[in-house]
Length: 130
Image 1 (cartoon, one colour):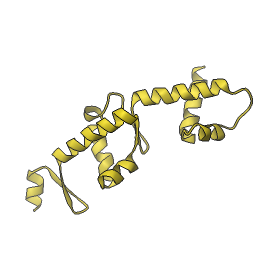
Image 2: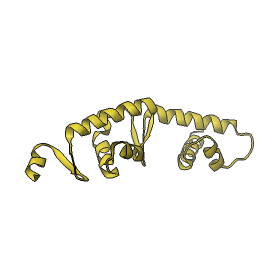
Image 3: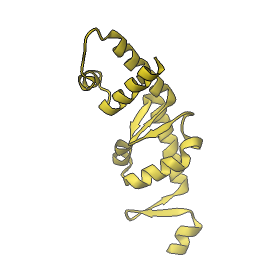
Image 4: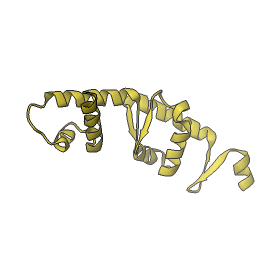
């Protein structure tokens, strides 16, 4: 069985044989989802495709530049497109410009449904840039 697995470019994951061709098709589907949504959580992909998180991360890392939209980034457990990141930054810029009194970043992040740490990082970036 091991010789078959090695010759056919097949990997055994949780008792299932997964071919490189399947991994390529998986990345094509992820490309479509990412193009539509701009942001995907890897945990959601593992649930949808019934694959382990480590395998999904490895699959994405190996094909990040070749099978995903240009400028796609893997940030923590999120896959985001460059366009999505730019929209998020513009959203944070608008929110920060609208503030007329002291406000807690955590409350603002929660109100606009942005992860608090990402919101803080983007706010710091915008403050540095002036």
